[in-house]
Length: 594
Image 1 (spheres, rainbow, N blue to C red):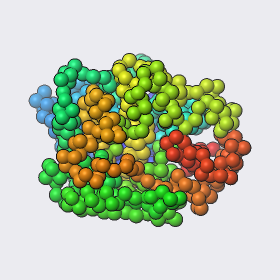
Image 2: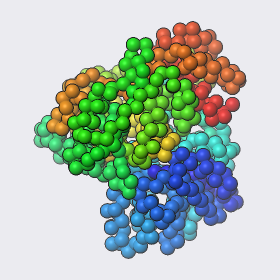
Image 3: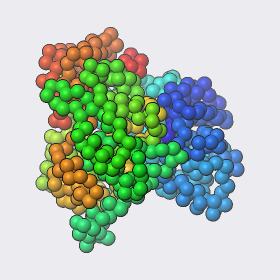
């Protein structure tokens, strides 16, 4: 787990190593253990390393393989690197390290752009060929590891974070009106390739992009699960599905224990993270370090789920750490969390994950998390309505449950200069829901949540907040083989028992019933839903700051109405609309964008 940066010059000049070094330096939090750089002609790489696998200097990056004529940088973890290493050795490759980063480069040497098909894990990769000058960028199937790109005439730069590209300089930091519409409508999700800034894009998940020496850019998507029934499973019973999913999840959890340092678990007390703990205990893990966080109740909303996390910790004998945060302490960590965001993210989970990661990083470098189970296995409230309608009604059903605003709502909040004249989020979701595959409306909803919403909201939030403290978070529910199997599972099994029915049945085999038969919980930070006191003052200051007034994103009358009654307008997902506006301005100001 690391931070990477690089530049490709396409104008005949040498790479700007100073810019690359500035970019890499901003990511010392992602890779606090070691830094490195490499350049050759038009290409330069920078890297910050968090030592997880092969702690020796042999796995320092950038990786340079002179025999293969390759150099590369890698962020993430390839869980099957040992098996791949054996395969590659059998094919004649010789290794100088014991790590997974060299395996990635050797895999490219063996299989070319198809190397990604052999990798099981989370990754962002940049590899250049010495003899051709070709540059290859690749991202894992679920987009767990980020990769941002900016292109100006003759120059391509890329990095693990958006702020790193800003540090390189020369970026168009104007607001992208289409991305802004997505942010305000699609519950802060800005689908790739866009970001909120016009000059920065992100490589989509499951994508390989090749910058050819003749100026061409080739790109292909290498993974796209159909979210449809597989004839091979036609005779499977409900128990067969439970058995298969349990076996696949157990494999996923086992894979994510690969490390040369201890691995713990973020234990919220919900079904998902509790099941990760239970499966690890069943595999013989003893004294597993687990961590939970809670906040003071605000506005009558409870702020912790310690009763459940304590129950799981006691049942499986974990080394449990309980972290409580008082509401009055939220402003400083909120500022820090916003600064750590590569893109503005409205979820109050960001502060929780930031604070939790801060404490966990004092004990461990690697944790597993239950993130992704709701999207993969039908845990949200909008899936049952989707199961009751046809494909032609999927858009309206999904939008009613998930969208924060429609076109009329955007016209209410945005200055006319930032209106696109349409409804970009609705158009995007309509196209995605109508794409081939996904036999039923609910399949289409699960597909867009798994491949788009999950990547650009929950997964991004976990990556940003954990890596702000040099903590690697691994997500077994996003093992791509588990996702493929779950996508083929009949929706009625996933939606049973109020959602995640098939997972609940698996849980009944190993977990206390109280953890399963309970109302759905969240990672709560009540102070960001019910704005008051110092937090409200901070939002007001951000919206009234000189930079905000110069930018003029929002209509004054709308902002003033929200400020007079800050908790009156909530989104369908119970987000605070004033917080949504304030967070965007806080993020822009935090990153020096005027």
